[in-house]
Length: 295
Image 1 (tube, rainbow, N blue to C red):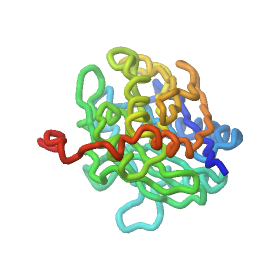
Image 2 (image 1 turned 45 degrees about the vertical axis):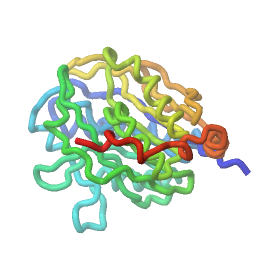
Image 3 (image 1 turned 90 degrees about the horizontal axis):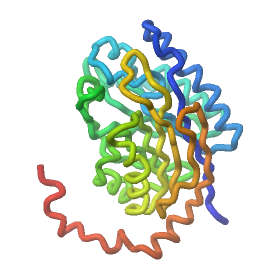
Image 4 (image 1 turned 180 degrees about the vertical axis):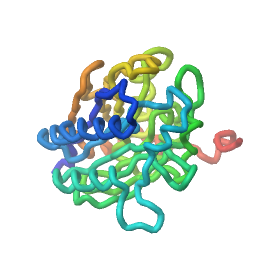
């Protein structure tokens, strides 16, 4: 019997772009996502991934300490209870019987913050998290080193009822090394939640991630938000969230400028089928790659 996982990606715009009260901005984004998550469940999704820092705007367009206030723990140190947003997502995962990949701004301890994604199974059980490794800091408007410490948890893969799930976040996608690590760790579906605008890298949007899918022979779900976020207006977040298969073919794609839930049926047995044809993992020569891990 074929192993089919119905997966969903959610892209959406910030509904309160001009609001100065950051708590209202965060609440509005969470409220907006409730309906979109429900839509994913109604479409039969087994797994759902949200966009990068889903409960806020892409605030890295400026360098202001006020945004530290929007960070929260995934699980506070020593606590058996999740932070408020992850606790809510655990409840939704349980309600909809749907695995959730939830990217948020994580407070690890006072003064230490990460760009992270929690993975929650369909019973509402927290499985673990990924912390973004590659942190950009460049003009215009991507001042991430002001907000995020580089990830320190490696490239984990989470075993779920609906497949083995890995996460790579936004700028990570420019680095094939981590994409390969996820494949070597057993990933069958890799989600890449992003916040990326039209311009220099747009032509790479449908090039790099299908290339990762081909090189590592797994599915990729690429997510991008939509709209222009004020007051920064660093560019248009151009949506076009998509799934591609282990042959690098895009099999489902969202629009450029609308809030949308894109759903695709992923045949996980295709991974073995493709790997039986293209033996990349058999034929790789790690002992000969002498420069890769050098500083």
